[in-house]
Length: 556
RNA sequence: GGGCUUGUGGCUUAGCUUGGACAUAGCGCCGGGCUUCUAACCCGGAUGUCGGGGGUUCAAAUCCCCCCAAGCCCGCCA
Image (tube, rainbow, N blue to C red):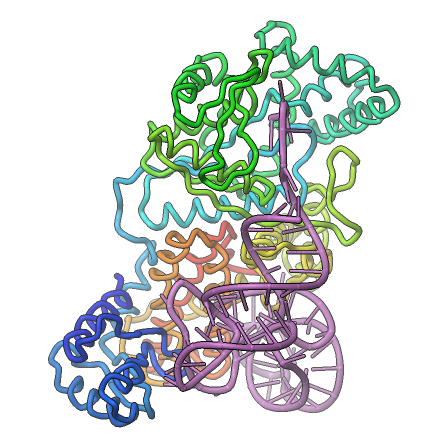
């Protein structure tokens, strides 16, 4: 299954043996080769010989090596190129036509992945869903890579924001408009309550009282908080379902007060040499480069968010082998403080994937100020566009069929538009790009897949043949061969955009093949081998799309 | 003020971990391709001081230092 990885390992081993170098500088060969090495440069320096000469000699030696049979080895100046032969291509095809291609071997490692975890004070907006889509794509990649995975949503149900919501529901007109979604309703009250607070700072005191009541466990107040948070989460779940995003478990922050975990972790922190107990309990992490003290408990004895978060992560660490959080860049400092403290406590240190902010052309988003584009609005708009597009292209289909395709196409556009950018890049939301269904979009990849499906459907039964000939055929097979390694890289680097780039390149290569090498019009063995290749490409596109959380629709 | 992240053709973007062969692609622009397997496509062309400066190296978008710009963070908020 891991053909490419296997070849690489063998090559590395042989190269080490024949050069005596530890680092044999093996890399992807780009357009020149499947793999290539620049080790001749390094040897040139040691041996005081011309690099090209060394490369030539090395190629002569390597070509005789029995383990490298079937690999074309050539020196191009100082570069040594390795081009894999027919066996590699046919093995790739055999693997790639199998269901589930790209999956790695099952592992016993239990992984917990937390993502989204937005405060329940208004609908998910285009910033939050960057978190959802990065997190959900990573989750799919982890499952594809064979890990045992649980996906969690951490519900912040005792924050100031939610106290403001509850205050609004008590003191303001709280009627829900007809057809108004729960999370949109909550945002409306939250925004209104914030306006009142600006006008009358006295209200802040009332909000503080609500927070204290919750911390004390006052039943009616706790119930009010839970009620509004639950309603907001209902709205979130609708949005996430529309994005093909799912969680296995919702974990409530306040549970970590009630079950005593927070108290327990505070008692352990108190014993750390870095603990400073004055009015507050805080950690002095300056020896690790953190300037400010890390407050764990307030002077009034109540816990802060950080304490609950530590309790939550200790619980995760006790139940899973790897703990991964997907968090916005605004959490970088507190994330690092959390990691540092977990280490001091001897607990499992969470791995954190940070993504930079999404802003609007007019500036940063704010739920409080009502300045945001909700994910629901984006989905509605994109589905409308997709439906018009499908109707224009496929007028013969009935409405439900067109609606179904439009939904999948819209979803593909949203997810791909967000996942294609590397997480550490801050972005500005752009309607034009979000609504683009052309190249470098999700629908573009879906389209390639649909074309492949169409060919296979028209072809009917055929005998599989794994021997390819033309350059476009071989180029496509070699692209197909990379999927398992791409999955592995996504997991190793926690960078889902690698899969997005790969999938687009695979679609490019398929479209090129589609253009140059006729399939159905060819005959005999050529037809069979091209159909086999189309089947492998279709399956690889399908597995890639589904790992991206995009529907691999058969027609569009 | 300090810290983290980013800066690649007009716009968006890959590559940076592990330095190496003409810097990846898309949008837009110019030109071409549907009696042919779905043109949401394909082919060709123009467009780059890889933010700026210094350094290391046979070789720097990639490593090191300085500077500039943008985003984020620096609360007994969450």
